[in-house]
Length: 70
Image (cartoon, rainbow, N blue to C red; front, side):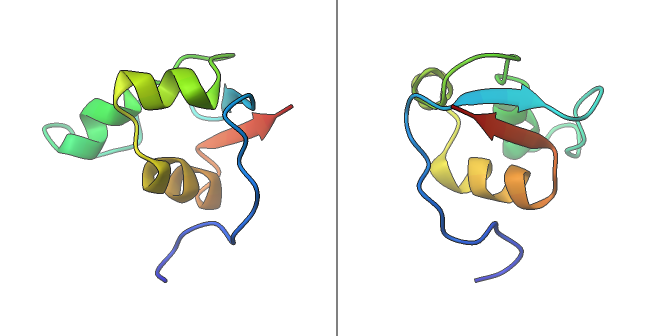
């Protein structure tokens, strides 16, 4: 499965907390653009609406770029 976070229930209502300053992704890549859409305190649902993918959230959780809070 790669370097993704272990399966867990991610609710659309969870709030995202950024754990890094700046964007840790490679500039010019699609994932860089999607990471830049995160905002502290936004819900997972808002992130999806902005274009963030579920696999982005799992990857960013696994790499501790973000945390989720109820």
